[in-house]
Image 1 (tube, rainbow, N blue to C red):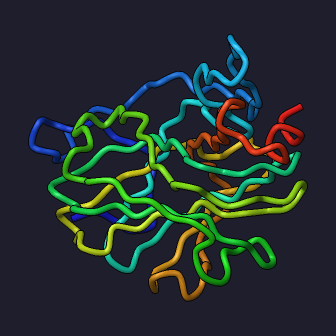
Image 2 (image 1 turned 30 degrees about the horizontal axis):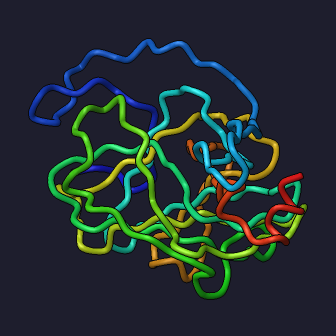
Length: 219
Protein backbone atom coordinates (compact mmCIF):
# COMPACT_ATOMS: atom_id res chain seq x y z
CA UNK A 1 0.00 0.00 0.00
CA UNK A 2 1.30 3.48 -0.85
CA UNK A 3 0.52 6.91 0.54
CA UNK A 4 -1.23 9.02 -2.12
CA UNK A 5 0.46 12.16 -0.80
CA UNK A 6 3.85 11.23 -2.24
CA UNK A 7 7.16 11.06 -0.41
CA UNK A 8 10.90 11.12 -0.77
CA UNK A 9 12.11 7.88 -2.28
CA UNK A 10 13.40 4.92 -0.26
CA UNK A 11 15.07 2.07 -2.09
CA UNK A 12 12.93 -0.91 -3.04
CA UNK A 13 13.50 -4.63 -2.92
CA UNK A 14 12.67 -6.57 -6.13
CA UNK A 15 9.12 -7.24 -4.89
CA UNK A 16 8.45 -3.50 -4.51
CA UNK A 17 8.58 -3.39 -0.70
CA UNK A 18 10.84 -0.92 1.13
CA UNK A 19 14.28 -2.40 1.55
CA UNK A 20 15.25 -0.23 4.49
CA UNK A 21 18.15 1.39 2.65
CA UNK A 22 17.83 5.09 1.93
CA UNK A 23 18.72 6.48 -1.46
CA UNK A 24 21.65 8.85 -1.45
CA UNK A 25 21.14 10.25 -4.92
CA UNK A 26 22.83 13.60 -5.53
CA UNK A 27 20.28 16.36 -5.92
CA UNK A 28 20.91 18.77 -8.75
CA UNK A 29 19.01 21.97 -9.22
CA UNK A 30 19.19 22.54 -12.94
CA UNK A 31 16.68 25.13 -14.03
CA UNK A 32 14.12 24.58 -16.77
CA UNK A 33 15.51 24.63 -20.28
CA UNK A 34 14.40 25.56 -23.77
CA UNK A 35 16.22 24.12 -26.75
CA UNK A 36 15.74 22.58 -30.17
CA UNK A 37 17.65 20.37 -32.56
CA UNK A 38 18.88 21.52 -35.91
CA UNK A 39 16.97 21.32 -39.18
CA UNK A 40 18.65 20.02 -42.34
CA UNK A 41 17.07 20.37 -45.78
CA UNK A 42 14.08 22.67 -46.10
CA UNK A 43 10.97 21.00 -44.72
CA UNK A 44 12.87 18.14 -43.05
CA UNK A 45 12.29 17.54 -39.37
CA UNK A 46 15.39 16.63 -37.38
CA UNK A 47 13.90 15.68 -34.01
CA UNK A 48 11.51 17.43 -31.64
CA UNK A 49 11.63 20.86 -30.08
CA UNK A 50 11.47 21.27 -26.32
CA UNK A 51 10.06 24.62 -25.28
CA UNK A 52 9.77 24.06 -21.53
CA UNK A 53 11.17 21.42 -19.17
CA UNK A 54 12.28 20.51 -15.67
CA UNK A 55 14.70 17.58 -15.50
CA UNK A 56 16.51 18.02 -12.18
CA UNK A 57 17.25 14.71 -10.43
CA UNK A 58 15.80 14.27 -6.95
CA UNK A 59 14.22 11.75 -4.60
CA UNK A 60 10.58 12.88 -4.75
CA UNK A 61 7.97 10.26 -5.76
CA UNK A 62 4.33 11.06 -6.59
CA UNK A 63 2.00 7.99 -6.75
CA UNK A 64 -1.01 8.12 -9.07
CA UNK A 65 -4.13 5.91 -9.00
CA UNK A 66 -7.96 6.12 -9.10
CA UNK A 67 -9.01 9.44 -7.53
CA UNK A 68 -5.45 10.50 -6.72
CA UNK A 69 -4.47 12.73 -9.64
CA UNK A 70 -1.25 14.74 -9.88
CA UNK A 71 -0.22 17.73 -11.96
CA UNK A 72 2.72 19.98 -12.77
CA UNK A 73 2.05 23.53 -13.86
CA UNK A 74 4.33 25.32 -16.32
CA UNK A 75 4.58 28.63 -18.14
CA UNK A 76 5.65 28.82 -21.81
CA UNK A 77 7.62 31.96 -22.59
CA UNK A 78 6.22 32.07 -26.14
CA UNK A 79 3.11 30.86 -27.97
CA UNK A 80 3.51 27.20 -28.96
CA UNK A 81 1.42 24.33 -30.32
CA UNK A 82 2.12 21.61 -27.75
CA UNK A 83 2.01 18.14 -29.33
CA UNK A 84 3.52 15.89 -26.66
CA UNK A 85 5.06 15.74 -23.23
CA UNK A 86 7.72 13.47 -21.77
CA UNK A 87 7.40 12.45 -18.11
CA UNK A 88 9.71 10.46 -15.86
CA UNK A 89 7.66 7.53 -14.52
CA UNK A 90 7.78 4.00 -13.17
CA UNK A 91 5.11 1.56 -12.01
CA UNK A 92 4.24 -0.65 -9.07
CA UNK A 93 2.02 -3.58 -10.05
CA UNK A 94 -0.20 -3.03 -13.10
CA UNK A 95 -1.74 0.47 -13.13
CA UNK A 96 -3.30 0.03 -16.59
CA UNK A 97 -3.91 3.14 -18.71
CA UNK A 98 -2.19 6.37 -17.72
CA UNK A 99 -3.94 9.44 -19.13
CA UNK A 100 -2.08 12.73 -19.49
CA UNK A 101 -3.67 16.01 -20.52
CA UNK A 102 -3.10 19.74 -20.70
CA UNK A 103 -5.52 22.02 -18.87
CA UNK A 104 -5.83 25.73 -18.26
CA UNK A 105 -5.34 26.98 -14.70
CA UNK A 106 -7.06 29.35 -12.31
CA UNK A 107 -5.19 30.65 -9.26
CA UNK A 108 -2.50 28.09 -10.04
CA UNK A 109 -4.81 25.04 -10.09
CA UNK A 110 -6.01 23.05 -13.12
CA UNK A 111 -9.46 24.08 -14.28
CA UNK A 112 -11.95 23.19 -17.01
CA UNK A 113 -11.82 20.29 -19.44
CA UNK A 114 -8.78 18.87 -21.21
CA UNK A 115 -7.35 21.07 -23.96
CA UNK A 116 -5.66 17.96 -25.41
CA UNK A 117 -4.80 14.53 -24.05
CA UNK A 118 -2.98 11.28 -24.71
CA UNK A 119 -2.61 7.88 -23.06
CA UNK A 120 0.13 5.38 -22.27
CA UNK A 121 -0.11 1.72 -21.25
CA UNK A 122 1.01 1.93 -17.65
CA UNK A 123 1.66 -1.80 -17.56
CA UNK A 124 4.59 -1.21 -19.95
CA UNK A 125 6.34 1.27 -17.63
CA UNK A 126 9.59 0.18 -16.05
CA UNK A 127 9.49 -1.22 -12.52
CA UNK A 128 12.90 0.32 -11.83
CA UNK A 129 12.36 3.07 -9.24
CA UNK A 130 14.93 5.20 -11.08
CA UNK A 131 12.14 5.67 -13.64
CA UNK A 132 12.21 6.21 -17.40
CA UNK A 133 11.28 9.08 -19.70
CA UNK A 134 8.02 8.26 -21.50
CA UNK A 135 6.48 10.03 -24.52
CA UNK A 136 2.77 10.91 -24.37
CA UNK A 137 1.56 12.13 -27.76
CA UNK A 138 -1.28 14.65 -28.09
CA UNK A 139 -1.95 14.34 -31.82
CA UNK A 140 -2.61 17.82 -33.20
CA UNK A 141 -2.22 19.18 -29.69
CA UNK A 142 -3.37 22.63 -28.66
CA UNK A 143 -2.09 26.20 -28.95
CA UNK A 144 -0.67 27.61 -25.72
CA UNK A 145 -0.45 31.35 -25.11
CA UNK A 146 2.78 33.01 -24.04
CA UNK A 147 3.38 33.75 -20.35
CA UNK A 148 0.25 31.81 -19.34
CA UNK A 149 0.21 29.05 -16.72
CA UNK A 150 -0.97 25.60 -17.86
CA UNK A 151 -1.09 22.23 -16.11
CA UNK A 152 0.08 18.75 -17.13
CA UNK A 153 -2.54 16.53 -15.44
CA UNK A 154 -1.84 12.81 -14.91
CA UNK A 155 -4.21 10.07 -13.74
CA UNK A 156 -4.48 6.26 -13.72
CA UNK A 157 -8.14 5.70 -12.89
CA UNK A 158 -8.02 1.88 -13.13
CA UNK A 159 -5.17 1.53 -10.64
CA UNK A 160 -5.34 1.01 -6.88
CA UNK A 161 -3.07 1.14 -3.82
CA UNK A 162 -1.17 -1.92 -5.08
CA UNK A 163 -1.15 -0.96 -8.77
CA UNK A 164 -0.10 2.60 -9.53
CA UNK A 165 2.15 4.87 -11.57
CA UNK A 166 4.83 7.00 -9.89
CA UNK A 167 5.92 10.39 -11.23
CA UNK A 168 9.44 11.40 -10.21
CA UNK A 169 10.65 14.85 -9.29
CA UNK A 170 12.37 17.06 -6.74
CA UNK A 171 11.41 18.24 -3.24
CA UNK A 172 11.78 21.11 -2.72
CA UNK A 173 11.55 22.05 -6.37
CA UNK A 174 13.34 24.87 -8.14
CA UNK A 175 11.27 25.35 -11.31
CA UNK A 176 10.25 29.01 -11.53
CA UNK A 177 7.34 28.60 -13.97
CA UNK A 178 5.03 26.41 -11.89
CA UNK A 179 4.82 23.61 -9.35
CA UNK A 180 3.48 20.16 -8.55
CA UNK A 181 -0.06 19.84 -7.14
CA UNK A 182 -2.35 16.99 -6.07
CA UNK A 183 -6.04 16.10 -6.05
CA UNK A 184 -7.72 13.36 -4.00
CA UNK A 185 -11.09 13.66 -5.76
CA UNK A 186 -10.36 13.09 -9.45
CA UNK A 187 -9.42 16.68 -10.18
CA UNK A 188 -12.43 18.41 -8.62
CA UNK A 189 -10.15 20.33 -6.24
CA UNK A 190 -6.37 20.63 -5.89
CA UNK A 191 -5.39 21.14 -2.23
CA UNK A 192 -2.05 19.32 -2.47
CA UNK A 193 1.37 20.51 -1.33
CA UNK A 194 3.01 22.69 -3.98
CA UNK A 195 6.65 22.96 -2.87
CA UNK A 196 7.73 20.11 -5.18
CA UNK A 197 8.31 19.92 -8.93
CA UNK A 198 7.74 16.84 -11.07
CA UNK A 199 9.96 16.07 -14.07
CA UNK A 200 8.60 16.97 -17.51
CA UNK A 201 9.45 18.09 -21.01
CA UNK A 202 6.89 20.00 -23.11
CA UNK A 203 7.38 19.58 -26.87
CA UNK A 204 6.18 21.43 -29.94
CA UNK A 205 6.27 20.31 -33.58
CA UNK A 206 9.44 20.08 -35.59
CA UNK A 207 9.84 23.03 -37.97
CA UNK A 208 9.12 20.92 -41.05
CA UNK A 209 5.70 19.95 -39.68
CA UNK A 210 4.60 23.42 -38.66
CA UNK A 211 2.10 25.68 -40.26
CA UNK A 212 3.31 29.15 -41.28
CA UNK A 213 2.03 30.46 -37.97
CA UNK A 214 3.91 27.71 -36.13
CA UNK A 215 7.12 28.55 -37.99
CA UNK A 216 6.71 32.19 -37.05
CA UNK A 217 6.39 31.16 -33.38
CA UNK A 218 9.57 29.07 -33.59
CA UNK A 219 11.74 31.88 -34.95
